[in-house]
Figure: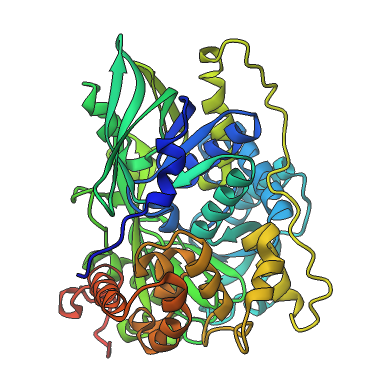
Amino acid sequence: MSSVKSRPHLFTTIADHGQDWDIIVIGGGITGAGILLEAARRGLKVLLVEQKDFAWGTSSRSSKLVHGGLRYIKEGKISLTRDSVRERQQLIQAAAGLVESQSFAFADYRGRKPGRWMFAIGLVIYDFLAGLRGKHYFSAQDFQMLAPHIPAADLKGGSCYMDAKTDDARLVLRVLQEARTAGATALNYLAVKSVSYENEQANGVVLQDAVSLQEYQVKAKVIINATGAWADGLRQQQGASTRLRPLRGSHLLLPGWRLPVAQAVSLMHPRDGRPVFVYPWEGVSLVGTTDVDHSSDMQQETAITADEVAYLMEAMDFQFPQLQLKLDDIIASYAGIRPVIDTGKADPSKEGRDHAIWLEKGLLTVTGGKLTTFRLIAKDALRHITHLFPGYQSDFKAINLFTNPSDLSNEKQLSHTKKTRLQGHYGESAAEIVQIARDGELDYLPGTLTMWVELRWAARYESVVHLEDLMLRRTRLGLLLRQGGLALLPRIRSICQPELKWDDERWEDEQSAYLQLWSKYYALPDKSSIPEWRNQLQPR
């Protein structure tokens, strides 16, 4: 690959800061971004570093649901559910266009669990905790209008309830944007080689730029390890024992016309009773999820396995037998690693999803938890370290999650849906994005809800270092388009190459690397290795 230029302008703040940071946050996922934002808004000098790209790990590979955790009611975790549903409601209000309500439908079949009344009790509690009320149960006839294509035999009716969905990577980027506005600094492709200690207390880090390989030594009063499923790595450097159980969750994406769902449809998998879902997301249908132990190299991309493909397709075939879905219908796949605290349970799905915080030799590790509660996790982390800042006080009262987005009411060329999307995804920058759009760039890319101008904005302003950053995280085109968007790369190149200031050799190298990565980790495994999931062999 042609040489990648160094990024000296990004590190002026590090090299010339002149004094120590209050906090260095390691990890550019939603947990690290949330801590960065909450700390910056409370007057602390904070630096976030990420060894790969922002949201590279779990935070771009989640199920993309902002949910309260209905199943936690069954487990008796009422306080976790209460906190989750309240945060969900605040996110829906604060980030309209980025976090959106999503109705879920759950069919009630004769002889299947859970029964109508058990589920209904759970839903009443769920809505009560969120301050909501609504009709939950529908007759078989009405339910089939809400969830067409499901089998009618033995259908008694069905339940519906509300949760929410998001673009997880864009949520991270929006939080980082707000943090920078509050005075924080966040840098990607900047790895922590080691944590430095003085008198058995962490007091700094040695950083290495993944692009130039240049190293920097930086001091801080507090080092926060917010690396999620990778958190044990830094802990083990100081002799701590492992506490995490990495679990893989894999997903499939299919065209909306091939797997048409207006509501999200939830079901219990016929094989093991685990919850599985499909819902409309960014113009496609997203199917998830598995929950299995992940033992592969954590520093490499993770990918769906052949058995997981069969598992998810079996669930869809069970719920939508009339559609006769085939492997060729699948656009893309992705897999993420969840940071779960290891309690030794035999079934990975039985492990709790609570977050944990450990202060060990001055290194504060924050891991576990849910996407929905990232702000509560951040506040909890800061409470653990306020005693390290003599004279510092913060009451941790609620602060508006996001600043008000720019006004687009005079942009008559934009539909309400497009205005809301830009405001939710880009906040105060929404109006500037409209201003930089050239002819046709406010149109959607075919088959997606992404506008061409979003590519231009990302390439110009959003710290894109590699083409994969642009296609998989700044936009989600690598998940939404066949072959990772290969057919549209010529036009994407015409927009983004000048903005990125890449020469032809650099673009071609980046494109080749991106397509190889997509084929290895986001396409399906060899089809001949995927087990048959139907009871009777049918064309695939």
